[in-house]
Amino acid sequence: MAKGAGSICKNAHMTQPSARRRPSADDLLVLLAVGRSGRYNAAAEELGLNHTTISRRIAALEESVGGRVLVRGAGGWELTELGRDALAAAEAIESAVRSLALDPAGERALEGVVRISATDGFSAYIAAPAAARVQRQHPNVAVEIVAATRRATQQRSGLDVEVVVGEPRVHRARAIRLGDYCLGLYGSRDYLGEHGTPRTVADLNRYPLVYFIDSMLQVDDLDAATSFAPAMRESVTSTNVFVHVEATRAAAGLGLLPCFMADRHADLVRVLHTEVSVRLTYWLVTRGETLRRPEVAAVVDAIRDRMSDQHDVLLGTG
Image (cartoon, rainbow, N blue to C red; front, side, top):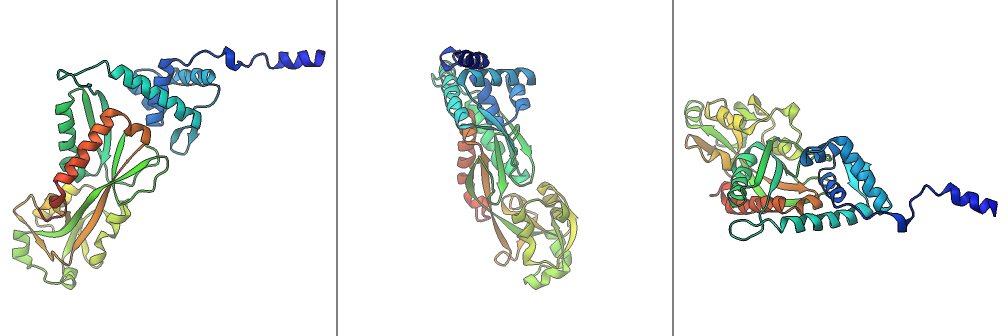
């Protein structure tokens, strides 16, 4: 008997299922912010709380549901199976609250901040017009665009959407194929007038190339793009594609440029149109739970619509 009583006393500090308090809606909304960003700091910034409060709220939620809702992974905090169930409840709360806010037309108003990372050219000519369209329709949605040319990150801290070149290898995220674009070889009219126009790929050996800095290029598909003429020497190189365009216009050499950027300039002439046409693909990466946010879904839809509208321009045929 005494032994049994001792066993009961030993476990008396553990909260029994019947004694657990009901999960707090506020705690669930904290989980929603952490689950979407993968970071306590990002969630704290979004909610206007401090890191300690976020940690305390998650601990309280775990106590109320009787298990872990988050585990630390290589890319930040990841949801457990129990956490995904709790996240679904949090999304229902968020949706219910948002349904109370209607715009002047009587439709559900969207609000929040959506942060996108994308390459320079995509940011300017695809993401920016798409974001502007969303903002016109939903004035309380702010879109932040971070221009970067890199692989998809495994740590999407503070980012809702990434757009990268080439099919990404990601875990616990969705990769959505947006569409193709082409790189072509261009020279300024003045440069070609002085140095002549190449007639064959073999002729390219005597021309300098304007492109990315080889040692700093992180994207495999972009790195392989110059394989058509490996003997071309480097001219002006940069991590920014707008520099490539302007250096080519300034007669620094032949530029391997996105057609949708180069074709906007009447002083640039495409050479070896058939022989040098590098087709690459844009991919969008986001967490599944992030994509369920209405404001993020609206931005992604606008980006996909913009890609469709610009299909021919992106391929250099428009």
